[in-house]
Image 1 (cartoon, rainbow, N blue to C red):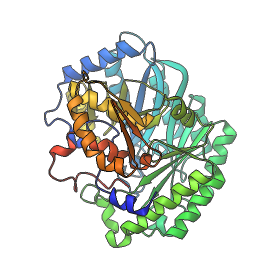
Image 2: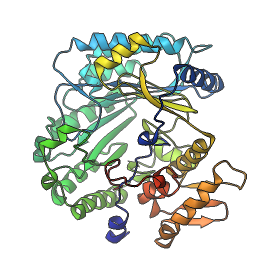
Image 3: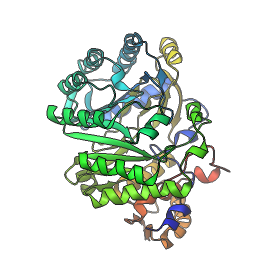
Image 4: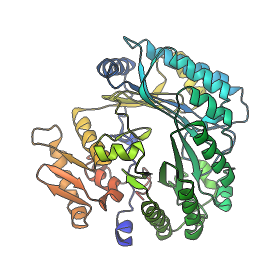
Length: 453
């Protein structure tokens, strides 16, 4: 890999947590009846075999981390927990009316915000309320995002008792200066303690989230963080690029572009971490992710069962993902919806209509075909087609855009097959973007997407 390639392909690109990406969803909001029928149909097709996934968005935080691009509500008033729990209860009961049998829950993820803003008792009550009307599928994948500054032994205990075996710790960086400017209050010792406590309790997988490109990050100090991370041996690591979008997230205006690493410096941060992780026993998984060889994510990548949804990479290939809470996104196979983002608007929507979404997308047959190819590239590093496939014209148009990437050694184009090379895995977003007809119908992506790297 050369720095020239990193610079060449560091262009605005979608994250491809879905296809079409959220900015390209329909202008017209899907009808409530469409959504109910889509959920009902996919549930009936898949519940008895693979089960369903749940995502709960818990938006509350006591402090604003100024780098954060998530949907949050800042408050120190913990009385909001009970009101929000009641709303989740109401939303879940609406979905239960669509099911012809008890749901088999294969996957739950608690995201935010700060899920551990909620007391252990309230988290337990909220989750037990959901699980009492469901069946837990064999080998469930239950995980939560853990803030090292406030996740207690009791949080770990009650979630473990409910079947949670994975947690993702928001490390971001260990550098005190970086943590200060992004308003993140935690220490290295907090991360060590949380990691050790989780492992002693029996959690089988600990993930660390890191972010490169944050304000005041320097190569030597970020590499110190990277080395400390590998010493702690998390089972998985997510290495995310900081997306500076102050026009979307005003909190990022606490610092300016002057405080951010220059483009070349940011790419050095990325390459340094990438090289260190791969030299110290971690396998690169899809994009942005690393895992130890014995971890289930590595095993899934090797045997071709890796999957990707709005929650990220997973070993569970569920087709129905129900998102509950503010801004949560749901996927029913033939359509997506996203809930209202503002807490009060979400409550109001729950009182006025059956499901509180404010936007969504009905997937056309071509959308579904392109999504299949992008998902296969993201997970398996290859895809194939034949001339009878829906949307095949877009594939051939995309192959022409990939000729330059082929010359650079990022892809191999064969008759009816496209393969991503080991080098090309670093540029997955660029490769998928070539196959995305919606991208090429736009004039400019500068204010719609952050950079690919």
